[in-house]
Length: 230
Ligand code: DC
Image 1: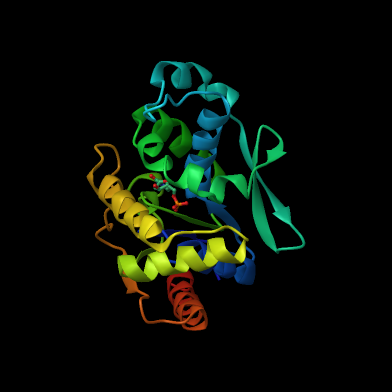
Image 2: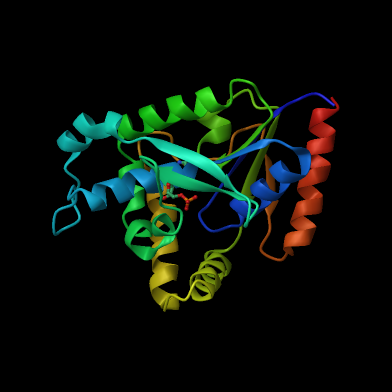
């Protein structure tokens, strides 16, 4: 079977990461969550006072400090999944909370942030054998990927999934706030100037609104088999 590049794009909270991680583990590929990288830059901004009271970002300072932001991933044996690190500190839980989620879209719309992260993502995929998920993987990061998947599900179902995830982590989420956040992010992700979220022409669409995780996993594995044996 030849080694390929797999790009999984789609809306927020539609289960992309779960599918992508499981597939990578099963086939022995590297898995990169590109959203975690945008979240980590957002956390850096929060930790270093780069947001003002109205949540505007000090882009001049961020641009100067971009090369001080080192993002890495380390495999966590307990969870069987990679954890995200910011300058050597594990930030996996912090980057998933509402503080970051509600501020990440504007950060990910900044052109110099995208340029820096896309460059790092492309370098990670040099050797193929990689599954990467995000918004612009099939369109911008790996336009030549052998397998491209575009995942969608209704906003209500996605909000419910994120609500359940946060609840399981012991947070006290409010469903309507999450739904609002999901819709807002969809809007910003699809309407930003640089690399807006859109389906690559050669991507296969998966609407998983009414699918179980096991069904998605099987479907994705079949797509992989087809693409890798061409
Ligand atoms: O997939 P996620 O919800 O963790 O992504 C967090 C944010 O980062 C989301 O608002 C979209 C943005 N993002 C992006 O612009 N490009 C990517 N390749 C991945 C994520």
